[in-house]
Length: 80
Image (cartoon, rainbow, N blue to C red):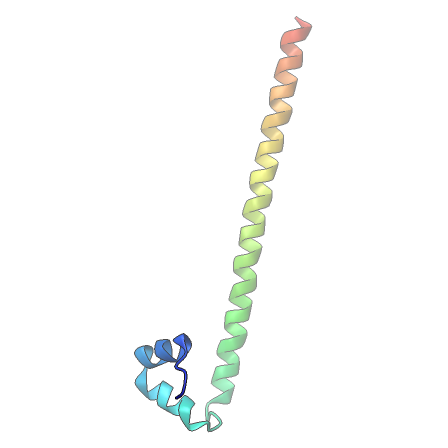
């Protein structure tokens, strides 16, 4: 008895024809388009990661600025 994987079910539900082609174990005729799509997705993934890191950096800088402002304000109050 063969195990059916979740990814197989997903492929079948998404496109029965693509699932069938996968099962034939034949090389794809549109390798260039697939490679181009893979490259696009990799680049997009890098852009998403960069955006998340920039957002994190911005949040950390905001927290640092608020901390410095709070310390400066507290020192100003204590000096008076």
